[in-house]
Length: 394
Ligand SMILES: *[C@@H]1O[C@H](CO)[C@@H](O)[C@H](O)[C@H]1NC(C)=O
Ligand SMILES: *[C@@H]1O[C@H](CO)[C@@H](O)[C@H](O)[C@H]1NC(C)=O
Image: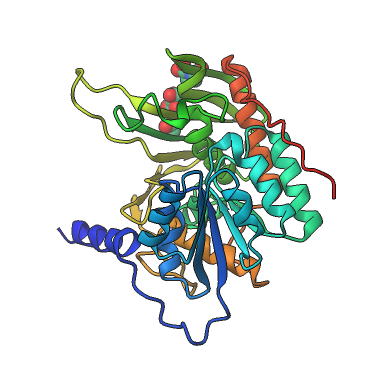
């Protein structure tokens, strides 16, 4: 009962009505954020986390349709809105804006991130960072040239839960990793055929949208990149065989021991796990399970740990235990901080020149994209099309 109540309290504070920040007077001047597109991800990923961050101001939103932009702005308390054919560029040209949040469809990430960086804005960019690793490389190279912060929004990395799992692995308590599996799969019915995720030209596909998480997660827990894609199988969308509605891939990683066996890893993503017996919805698959030489550790719910998660450590000999990690010991954060809230804290710290609790390097984002492409190559679907946009030279 109290577990249910705790989950509800955290959910309410994270996603319905975040408490106001306490330190508004002493905080440094807020960064003004502008959003490209009135996307459905924006409220949980930025709008709600911003409410409890004294250094974030929700300033402007742009959408193709000005009415949509205006409604979004009014509903969520933004001062300004831009719309129409030039709306996105007008937002980028607004000199008051410090940071641009880019939740556009994957195939537009490159063009609009390049334009935002060219306009001198820091960018918080939704995952996956681009359609290809080459796009990602170019975006980070421009950010570097301009001295701007660019972050791919792999929000789960900023939460204490996944960091606790990695600390358990790194402590050596269970010995070297032998195997690590991660899944992100949703029951059928959440994503329709008209969803942008089903559109190849703008970077659709399950491996792009949700497979990027388990891939990122197994790379994080092994502190390594894969050595090979052993096999990868895609469930192809009947409406467009270049789109996967689900992908399973077997990877290997080099052992952390000099002469150890390679680490095995299976990652899985699915937009539409079939109903059981044709009508019973399945539970989402949101776990990461690691088997080490002397025991295993499993994190249930690595993507939305604020609502509920559990870390189960099972040594081969001795007693097993369950841990929770909603906050960092001695660090910033509250039990109800979502992954997105922790991420926003780190992002603002970085822009303000402070040291964030955690950060994701450009190399990390580039490698994730490289391995997404390798998995698509192995499954036979191929990379998503690279943007043809060319930033005019100033
Ligand atoms: C991955 O490996 C497992 C275990 O060896 C096997 O059962 C499964 O079919 C493989 N999956 C793919 C997609 O090759
Ligand atoms: C990982 O997945 C593979 C393929 O489904 C399976 O054979 C293996 O038992 C799984 N291992 C763990 C630790 O879950």
